[in-house]
Length: 480
Image (cartoon, rainbow, N blue to C red; front, top):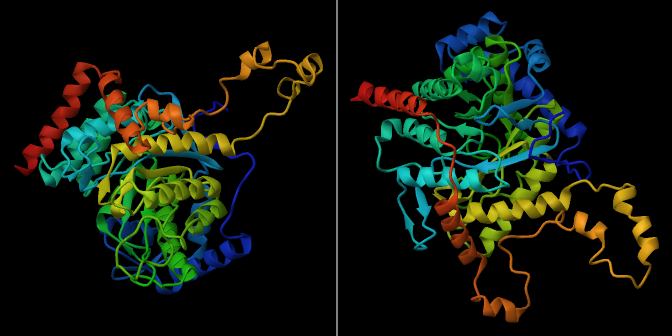
């Protein structure tokens, strides 16, 4: 297999739930689907499900077990995404983990001023170019919701900005079905044709579903559309335990999982073999102290990912985020723990790197810092090569206890292999002081500025740039 960049866990795995717990939740989800049902708010989705064997009572749809079993048999176990040049970049499945940003933050923590402000389209461009430059970031999302474009079609402007400012895979989000169609049209223009994009998709849609037991029209329309076109999708219902589902982790997860299974069934009815990723976060109790949708909570860690592993399906996870508003100790520990748990649990496409304040704020500095943390975590959890070359018994015999290993050719062959942080200061105090006594926060800001000044992205051909701009202009003209 052609290797891609993501971390492939060959040793240390961690499962929050065992096979017995996952089996119970699966059976509970089947019972929910057959006895309670899910509210389906789209006529075509209703008709598709009923024609496949489901029962409908108004918008309430009940799905028998055999439909779920059949869909789980045909849905692929791996989701492949490519870069803009057609090279395999993400093979989401198993314990291969890839990391990228998030979308639509309403505020930015400006790395130059340290102040919170409203973002613009230029911030979306900067975030895309920064993520393109950072070696440990595997895919790009829009990061910010720009204030200086038409709010009704902000996502079309975001997509244009991302396509022009990265060659890495893209995960896009749209508030309506028409935005999803426009985004796919832009990608097809970049790829050269609809068939070329289908064969080597370099973008996928993150579909926000209202909850496990409520499937909104836009989500269902996107699910069918993408499946019919043979394009991968991230079908993500999310529950808030104690608010729209039971407060217990098991009850919350069972009802959320029922909605996920409905999406898999619908996608496979639309087109057998359509690739679908499932949720890797939420599925646990909401923060009932604050009633805020926090991004890093202890109790939910690993629960939905365990279900994704139970089904052997690609998992769309969350990591590298914090509910802190500043780059402080809370930020550091929440970001690192969420990265580590997503990695150990085996989430595959892990988004929201650089998110702060419960997703209300994003930070380019934090994205740069997470890139450094990821380098450490990937080195710390990678497999260890043990062979004649790495055991180096001949070198040990040659040099013995007192020989100098520093200048030996074996050292020269391998000394660049260990991870060396670009942002953590490992020098003695005197050296650190001489170099300006900087903090990691300050060094990250400097790195962001340097990369934005120096990094260039291979531009799209002029006619392709014009084609995707025409799609944005068409969408603007349609709304007036």
